[in-house]
Amino acid sequence: MHEPSRPTVIARSSAGSLRPGARILLGALVAGALALPAACGGGGGSGTPADSTSSPLSAAQRSQLHLVTVEPDTFRASVSTTGTVDFDGDRSTQVMAPISGPVSRVLVSLGARVRRGQPLAVVASPDFASAVADYRKGVAEATNARRIADMDRKLFAIDAIARQEMQDAETRAEAAEADRDAALQALVSLGVDSASLAAVRRGEPVTAAGGIIRAPLPGILVERLITPGQLLEAGGTPCFTVADVSRVWVQAHVFDTDLPNVQVGDSAEIRPTNGADVYRGRVDNVGAEVDPDTRATSVRVVAENPGAGLKRGMYVQVTILGRSARTGLLVPSSAVLRDEDNLPFVFVAGDDGDYRRQLVKLGQEVGDRREIASGLQPGQRVVAEGALFLQFAEAQ
Image (cartoon, rainbow, N blue to C red; front, side, top):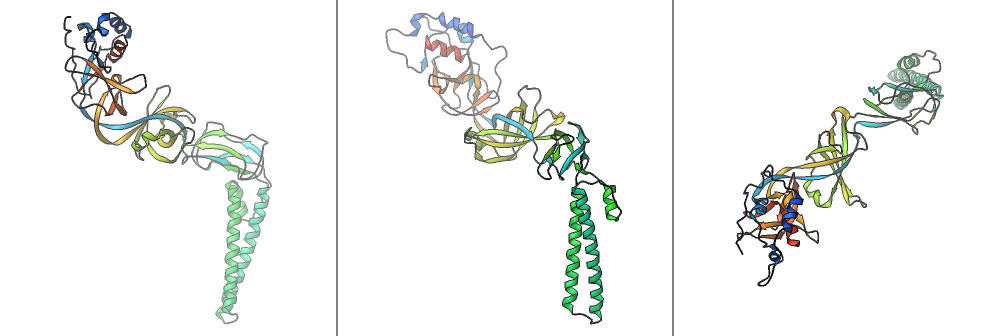
């Protein structure tokens, strides 16, 4: 039989990209494989090893096989996984009712941008009258206690009373002033408007005023949970959620095998499933426990969110980029196939023109290339394009 021509070898660095126009149709390859002479599958004489493909190929068929030379390359390890978008817990909060009573008015609309301290709703509450009474009582008691303490100090100066009596009076005055200040703070916590609060402090009579629910931080009103007339319970009824959506958290799910390659401070790329934009972030926290259901660890990425394109609850693709570079053997992802046992292998070109299977252990995925942790040596040539054709030809 005529000796087949040597394969056309496209030698290149593993860091290079495949030759443009080298993509071939699987149908054409299958047709080429079926056209191989039946005698090529083996006949009399010595058998062919199970891990090699020694069938002679035509020059046209060999021209479709593109090889790369395996060489060490420097790269940064990356981890690709999925994640879920959530509000930044440091820039978002649920606003609870600070006062009990029915809602009189809701002052802002859903989606509105609010500033810190801005009124969100008015609550008609009897708590206001009670708080005013407590404050005025505290003012009176503090004033009287201070008057007595000042008088006792003068009496002690002329040896009219004992030192202990003077000190007791001063202690009572300080306690009364602390109670007064606490009553004032309780009044402030009701969210009373500044004009009514000033009137109370001056001792002027005030009409019944409503408590005000205020925004605790600047941001967007992303949830409104109350309506006019709804009865609120102080400290127990959630009313609104305010969030600064210019920055979000992405909870990525990283499996055990990838955890050694993830560290706090690593940069990350976040892509929505629609692939419209790429958002940049940084690993802020690596969870301390593994989810018993998914066997994954939660890794929190803090991402800038210009245009508010990342929404809470959105599923995204997350790529975490390692900070330290390392050297390893990389081959195009197209060179890696799976055998009947789902084990990864590549086709290695021999000096005699044959191609044999070589089982490999895979490492990191680096763009459109895969790291080969073991199974290959520098200088070997592997089939980067046309490997599927060889696998099919083996089966004939």
